[in-house]
Length: 230
Image (tube, rainbow, N blue to C red; front, side, top):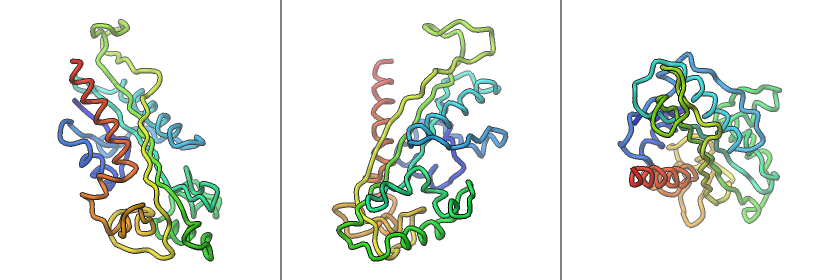
C-alpha cells in the first residue's frame, strides 16, 4: 500500500512515519516535483487539508502509478492562541509574512518573534493555546475493481470527499523559547501536564501527545479497521 504524504517538510514526514509505522510504502512531494501546489485559502484546517488531498489525488490519478492501492495524506495544522482570538490559526506558517502583504511562509524565527510581540504583557494564565491538526485522506485506486464505477482502462477512480481526522493538544505559550528540537512554534508551546516544551520533550514523547499524533492515531485505527474488514 502506497501512502503519498502531501508535503516537502521532512520534519512532518518523519513525525507521520513515526506515528503510523512501517506498514506503508511512503512517498512525498519530493518524489513528484511536478505535482500542483494548491493555494491554502480555506478558513479551516480541515478545509485546507481536504483541498490539498483532493488536488493531489486527482493529479496522481493521471500518473503511471503501480497497480496497487494508493492513498494521499494531507494535513494542515497550526497554533490557536485564545488571547489573540484564535490567531495565528490557519495562517500559522505565514504569520509574520502577513505583515508584509505576502502569502508565502515565514521563517520559524519570524513567526515566533511576532507571536511574542503580540503577547507581550499578557499574564501566564491568559496565554492558553492549542495546537490543532486536521488530516485528510483520499484514495487513488485502480479502476474497474469490484464495487467501483467502471471506467476506461488506465483511468483511476478518486473519491469526491476525503476522510478527515482531527486532533488537538492544549497548553500555553511561554514568554521566551525553550529547547532546540522540533519546528515551528514548538519552543514556545508548553503542553498541559508537562514541564517541558514541545522542543524539549523529544520525539518519542511528542509523537504520543501532539495534535498530529492524536489525529494520526485516529487514522491508524481507521486503517486497522479497514484491514480487519478485508
